[in-house]
Length: 341
Image (cartoon, rainbow, N blue to C red; front, side):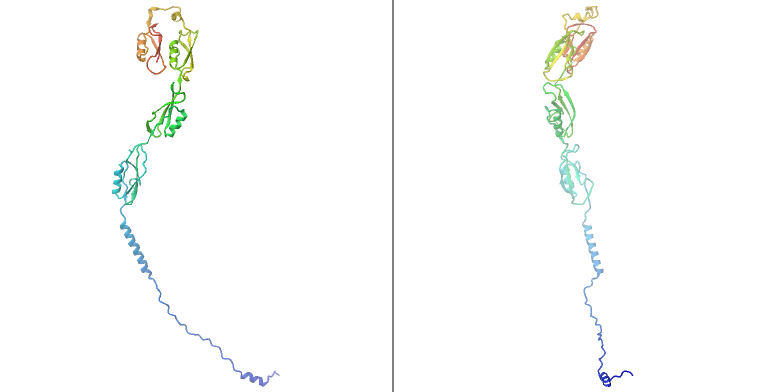
């Protein structure tokens, strides 16, 4: 049998009220009206901006002046150049002067900007004035050594061209005597200077000179002279050697030895009998005295008498200082006469 339930229980359950079905309340959507905020008109904004730029560009364009061409002022007087530049609407500034070999002092050397440059009205240009050629004063280097003189000249923006040694008994050997150009002269910057240095005393060449003349000349030059006579085939009483040698540099007061062929009482014992024929008076001529005469005049006079002439230099004076044979000596025609100048 199927299970049976008590009757009473079924009635109780049938009499209990049932809950009402649930309902969701859906309210209609209410549209909230949007507030009316500022909405820019971009077309008008853009148009205004374009017009502003156009007005600005137009104003800038019409405010611009024509460009100015920098005039060529080089070589003009500074005052005139300033007026010319100012008349074109340029502002003038004077720069530091510079030396120049071609443009005279007080004239415009150059401009900055350079001539023919295009600049705006009111631009500042610089005028650089010329100070003229730069000149350097030759310093006094007398008495210095050659090296010290070179340094002093270099410090003065000068260069040494040549160094020449000269005989000089007043200035100590190896010290500067003078320069060329001379001290105090104004020369170009970097100019070349010749320097003359003392060689002390330079030994003169007295070879072949009569003993007394040679000794006298050397003594007069400040030398201490000693004479040594030797037997020799050279003309008696003439110098055959010397020490120091000719042209050697020596100090003032140096000792000099001259060697001479032994002197003979009768000169013609040497001269007339060398070929065994003796002296021939028929062809003798008197040697004129030419001491103190111009060399060319002395040479012409002796050659006109039939003598040959040989010249030796002691100093380049152009005047005869010594002669051999001595004046008024008798010599055969064609003999050689020695002259020292």
